[in-house]
Length: 212
Length: 387
Image 1 (cartoon, helix red, strand yellow):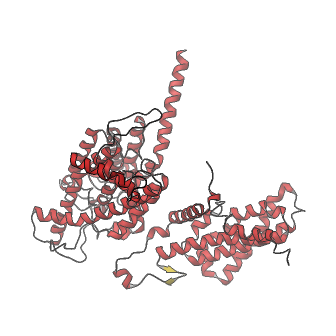
Image 2: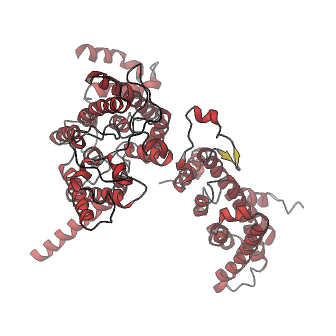
Image 3: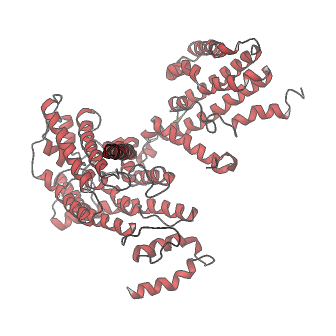
């Protein structure tokens, strides 16, 4: 067990969640971060789906990495990811139909998520299955973390609810003059919130700032 | 004046490094340079000096805005007294409007300058003067019923995200006053458009009278939903519902004369906005879809809504508009044309001036680039043919 959770493996798992976050540091997967974060529930489901798919595709590709001919590796990776995406999509349709409808095409579009292909190319093609699994889960959770933060802010300020439960839409609040912010439900605000997270993270960690 | 100068000189050491009010250095500096033109000059490099500094330019714009603002205050009162049927003379109407508009001006300045002071202190820079103008423009482009807290949120958003993140005054891509309006427009559409926000139905300190559920549509709103209103002189004088400062063509024309006379605004931008709007209006009159707003005569398009206000005070903003002389024609023309296109073709928005200017703000650098490159290649060709 000692080897399984060595310091290096812990680093592989935790770096993408904070200091090497795929969304805020590598700026990948932005499109789906804009599209599915107007409500908290789809954002959580989306984050979990991406985590599962990244983890499993990383493991599968890592297992067969030595037998994949280099020239057609992208096609092989795509087939693996597409199979996993289809499984997750069917699973959601069967057990969480409402969320699946809300996410609509974005579940299928996980296949084009840059984080997935990025991890396969950069990590799974060169590392063993266990490390790849940790890396996949770490990156998926790093992505999910940003999605949940953005969706939390957008749903609370835009709709006045959280996970569909009423937080701000009471008569007393309306009497006081409060109105939900419609701009929060539009994609531009997701970009601005992601930018604020990046701003905060870089202000806090000087090593992330580029020298120009 | 001398007494003031002496007083400032006496308290100045308190604000310098090590003084007891050092934390308010930027505030002191801001006020000092607002009252007196600084006599310091740069010590290194080659600089071109102008006798006028940007605080003085901003003061000219604020003076040019005064006629539209004062008329806007009167119009707020006039609309209220007419819609509610309350009795009142000129001064009561003006006082009512003054009391309705004043809180908006205060909120806009307090929030905007507050953020500027904090940023200036934090970055150890001087206070930037750009907000002097934005702060007065913002209350003039919102409807009278816009709640103060919304205005405060929008001003904060605009100053931080449209201005400070780009590097402050002079570095912004978008006009901060228009970003404030766009934020309000998209975030709180119910408080920024429709029929219920343009005329205040509340009495203030016993002036006027409170009427619930008062509605009054702007002429553009009527043209959008019902039929095109006939031209009347109220559209020129400005006695019609609308955002606070935008209604009166005459008051804005006075402002335009001040801006052009002082050389702050470019006549090229201003003129081409009107030309673009008029031409596009005629195009829609001739070939447009069969809707009321497409049949609206071009001169009515120019008088109504925020067209004049945008053309004179927003499109000519020296920071966000094109800087090349030929570019100003293209930039202005496209703003005018785009504003009418959005008005006529977009079913959701009766007004297009705000979106047109914001859109062209993005393209201003591109227009400049094309004009400069074009000039370079033209002269290069001439040099070749002369040899």
